[in-house]
Length: 252
Image (cartoon, rainbow, N blue to C red):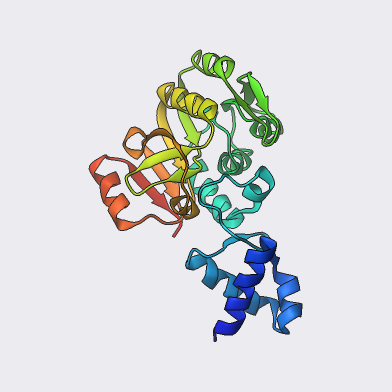
């Protein structure tokens, strides 16, 4: 049974501290960690908190969380989405992966794929897939964005223009109900647009928390990509995808 007083207290603590821990809340309220996890899930479902490993954080829908926070945000959902996406990529394919923790999750799922040619502007993706000894990894150089290992700018864009790959796997900071993919960094947006242009098939990996966010710069429309891999999508947006022939692969 949900304790509404405890729920309100958890939310107040999260607002004050910015984040809350499952173990600390269980001790504070004298309940089991399972009970706290249910409380946090209730608040996450209502859009009041974002679940992260070991707890939850207050969502800021108009600011991109730092890389450390993004890495644990919706971690299990990203892993399942990544697994679903990787199944659609055959061996011997060329694949372009951009910046983001969702694409990094896909990279981990591609470790057992054979004879891939990987092109990426994400240092973390390159590091992950360097352990796939049957595959070639090409890093598109450019200005290093230190906070998340992304490579951006004109040099990166020009490097990517040299390729025409079988599949692009891209992430996005936000996805609105009109089907717009949105980002915070214009330099990253220019690279992502080029990635779409230089790919025969484009896959978007985006968990449903992206629908609760906003960002100021438009990358493209869902109509410009071939498939969305997600853990849930509103009916109105799903209907648009159907009219645009954009496939939906959902773990939910």
